Image: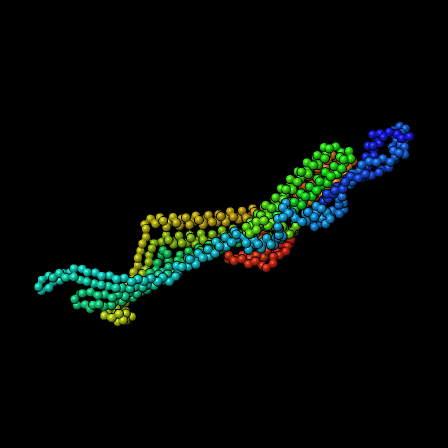
Length: 603
């Protein structure tokens, strides 16, 4: 005789089924499976009541119930070695989500992409970055200015040709009385001169003059030729005297060349730093897509299982709605993550001056997030910063400029006292050749020598220019001290950022492991009814957040190393890129592991 099926018997059967078939979710990669609910036959032994009076018949011992299938997942053992650095390469090739991750990161599957490594980024930055090219042009312009200032020693040549005619009335006293007459004079002349500035401030010039003169003066030969040659020397004795004052603009231009070359080196280093940090941001954006997809896959798997449970009548509809809402929320996060990949890729391509060539092309990083070894030595780092930072080098050259300006200003407070001397020879004859011959024969020599003096009594302009130069030199020393403080602060800040981010990586790894265990425990508790869908979704969200935080810490650690090398001024040395005197030498192959081991940094 069959007995009626009691509610306690059914509940016991369902609970036993859940215990025997727990929904073990994946800890790292959950695979969406389309397995439909199946039926299973479970033989249940009679469960006596408290009073031991109820006996189950053979007909009721075979109870057919609807059983939801366990999700198809990877076991914890297969994921033990899966980390944020290698989770892409360790994904099962048969994994649906894994195939999606390996095939592309972009929302638009038709968008072309090309792979790029960190060394590619550095080389492309050096070769194509527009800011570097502009800085190179500015450096070359400044180098040209040096040659402009050298022009003061160019040999100066001048000359001219002129014609003049005069007709003046004159009174001539004759025996017959005063007679009015006219004096005519027609002169055609040519002159040429050569002058040269001396390094000590003097000027040497040589003047040639030749003229043909025709007149109606009685008792003179007409026409006749006159030639002359004059050598003149003028030299300052006090103000503007000496090589330093004379060549001050040339020396200042040399200092400016050094400053410009240092600024070019600074620009190269800054742009490489920007490109590297954008590259690390791209690694983060792409890896963030992977993590977001894993999180979405976990939410979809939970939704699939909840649907199966709801169809079996063992789960309320609210749990299904919660799972659906979380899937939609994570899909939104995936959309935003995909967009960020495109934005970061475009930013990097703009930095590399490639975005206009092919706007639709995306960049795919070939490097995976890593945690390189980086030895820290604060004393050595501060010493390297004082030695290699371009800003300090620029201020030191500025101090040299200020010192020179002070010496020049001091000289210009002196009186103007110049010595001069001229010597000339004049010849005249009825033929041009004989007139020139008289000049070279030095038959009619003329000379003069003397001193000229000039001095403003108050001399306010020169005195206050000197005071300004003194103040500029003081300001330059203060700027050096200020720049040293800034450099020291940047190095110390960089050191702390590297140490802090490394600690964040260690804590992030622990947090991920803790949240993996929490998710695993929550899924098992949900399978036996001790946790709700809301709890599991919250645990999965915490795990996704922990993974993203770990990835962010790894990327920030790499960026902090780059920023620290930039703060020390040694970033170019790491890649063996030599920038000196405005010229850049780039090796054919860059080192593969830039920050893994300590490198000897030299000049």
